[in-house]
Image (cartoon, rainbow, N blue to C red; front, side):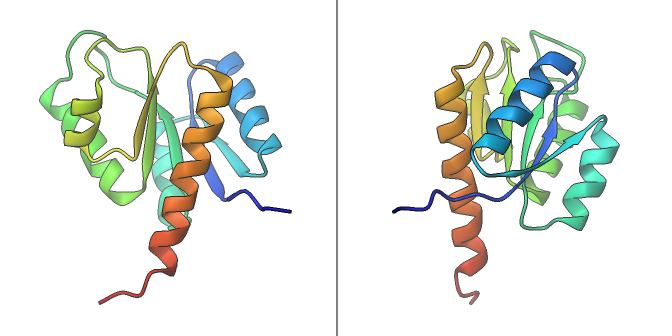
Length: 135
């Protein structure tokens, strides 16, 4: 019997229905899901859970552009905690995700199976990074 990687997932999504769905999906995959109501709350939980993965909906203002201040906030957050960005923003692309240092990008509307796989893969990477010897 193989074991799928599971870990702590911090979830920030402002749409209650989507947040509940994501929490259910991720919990069924064996993750310890901690839903957050605000960017401040997820930052606090990330500081207290250094081995967590964050799954976040973008909390900025614009759908078409990413303002410098918003870019800086997202980049800083992604460097503090591995982050999967789940968004329908038109500025979001794999190239932008790479520039921001995100673990992954999932476009809305998302496929449930794809979301599960992305999170499993990112959790496995977080666990591998923790277990890797530091030089």
